[in-house]
Amino acid sequence: MAETDKPLLIKRYASRRLYNTETSDYVTLEDIARIIREGREVQIVDLKSGDDLTRQYLLQIIAEHESRGENVLPLAVLTDLVRSYTTQAQSVVPQFLAMSFDMLREGQSKMVENMTSLPNPMAGMPGFEEMQRQQQAFMRSMMAGWPGVAPGEDAQADQGKPRESAPEDLAEIKRQLAELQSRLDTLKK
Image (cartoon, rainbow, N blue to C red; front, side, top):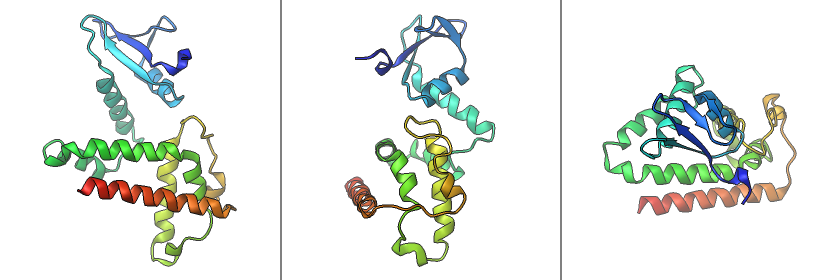
């Protein structure tokens, strides 16, 4: 296994400073966020206790980005997440989120490309174009910095120009939608 395939081990010292074990230097939360955006997994452990602190620090990174106005999570989603901690939905929410992000990762660049491809039967629905623009903006923000997605890759969509796409792309979208529906149906049971 290549060195970069393993999570980067970051140790937290008693002083709360974070130490990158590969480069032998101290890192900040912003450094860790950059490493993750570059596609590398991280594991943050307390040097003294050995406790895994990764979740705590990742949530802190998200909170800092959100507080600076880099809003990715809509208020309704945040509200629903808070509710999920106090309801029976708690057991379903992590699975749903994990499956949603897995599907997003599977077709990251293809999904952005396909959203502006061949005409959709729903295109005549009132508000469809605005919904499509919002989806495109969401996908670009979610995939910014992901491996395999170049910045500005969706420049044509930003200019309102439709992309040419092969019929197999439409078939792939239909397959992905059917798979998502199947997974949602499974969760409802």
